[in-house]
Image (cartoon, rainbow, N blue to C red; front, side, top):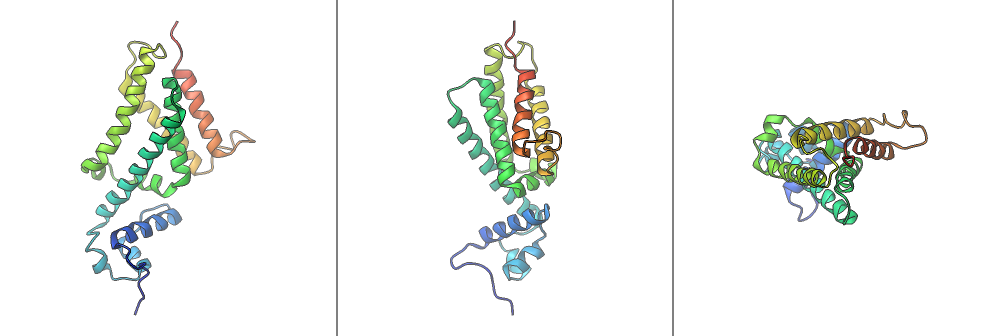
Length: 206
């Protein structure tokens, strides 16, 4: 008979999410419920009382990841204020890079989550919208202060910026950045790439 690895007083849901995080960190992929139950030393049927299916698990893991990301972004912005909107945008990107470096399993969870599943979850959408609205406000301030042209498409710029940052972080996670910049580690190269991107896009208009 298996001995449960649950700690005394630990809630099954939190234990399952912690186990899923650890397994994702090892494999790069969110685990099946059967594997989580095995790690916890319980039957899959018992686990399904709190996590009915893998989609539910993905949503819980994504919720935790986005909460942490938003918290880190808020902290980074607060630490860099008062500053220009361009510096604030760099703070957002730096928080994103640091979050992915510290919690790669959370980055992988969000990256591999089916779009339809994400979009059907109002909690996840609210976190995403909070970040998007924050960035748009920074873009608007940058535009008002002359760093962007008056007719710049801010929604499109947000999409381009996110795609660029996502690509940079993805290469960082693969340890595939420092070979292009000898002498620098991957996180520092990622930050330098963001600064270069901002220097090209955000310039005081003449």
